Length: 524
Picture (tube, rainbow, N blue to C red):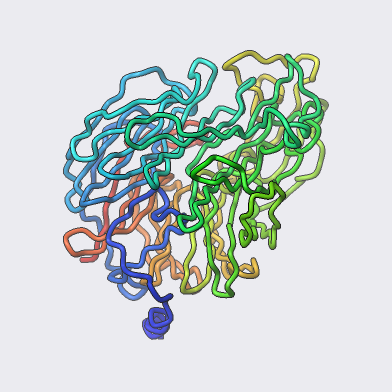
């Protein structure tokens, strides 16, 4: 019966959905659907999946990189290194080492590819290009000041001769987010969008700024998505800071914790929505929205962030009105607790999701045949006691959070209390269709396939294959290292493969130190 169900699903697949043998961007396609149209691996045979090859970097690092597969090469990054390996054998083709100061989060989340070049960011706020065939440098552009805590951990997005990227570091004193379009040919700046506006109605929403309390926040930590037909770039932005000190940043503080639609050719903002208003929990809108035309004919941007909610955003009108977009549904995808309870300097307040909770750097995916949005989430809570505002001082490059100094980002629940969820939601209604409960947080990417399997990974190091119809576990395999990066599917040597980035050693996560590795799977 299961195989018959998937036969019918295949017959109902959308017209024009040709099989793609490559994985050309951080989220597969520009719209960030993460859907693989390959059908060799199915719900019926996924149990026969086994490792084909492994490339171990030998680095102990927080491996959160997405994976790309273009023209037979897998591309991925660690903090200062960029790799190209053979997609069929995992043999190293080249490795580029960029020497430089460490900064930011100590992580890098991958590359973009366009016209024979790969593009990535750095911990000291540069973006540079490498020749995809040789790994030789092509150009290097500066986006921010690494000495002030700015970095570019995100995987850029490349389209139509342009490379889109932005600075992170918005939890540091005085750092505000900016989105850039660079020339893919030579790296020169084409336009820049300031997430914290310098004037106008958006600036008026910043009501209590001064030299000692500057506008801070709105950084972009992860990749973007793009509608190539409309030429619209979609950007999710980070929280306002000081993170927990609501009294220090009254007002809406636009355009922090927002999803912004930008004209990709000009940099002009078209529309926006701020799903998380008056944030005081460090609840960024962390990941790029997936751009969907649903089975019901709706145009939806499905976005998720650290507040633990999946938002369905109406994107049917992109006229340059500057007005808010409408949220058509808001579906919780993890535990919500005390989200409206004020924080105080007198005692700790526990809230869920915590500062490491909700959806992190890998956002929603979309299964077009089943009309499902699939999103991973962390179930892990935090307790925060505020620092007295009179004692809170900031300086350039310093963390600007606002909790008492011994635990500047709060006290996270013990590891024994963590968990995670993969939730499948109807793209039209926001109704939950099924949920998979994980023994660990789920921060890895989610990849649904036309063969009826949804792939992801957990912090125990397991790669998991789930039945897309109901969420039941069909297959599981241990990589030996926490999975927190890319999970992709592509074709190499005429065979469908699944590749996983494993090895997310500790930064803010209680994990064992392991080397970063890419593991490739195929059928027997």
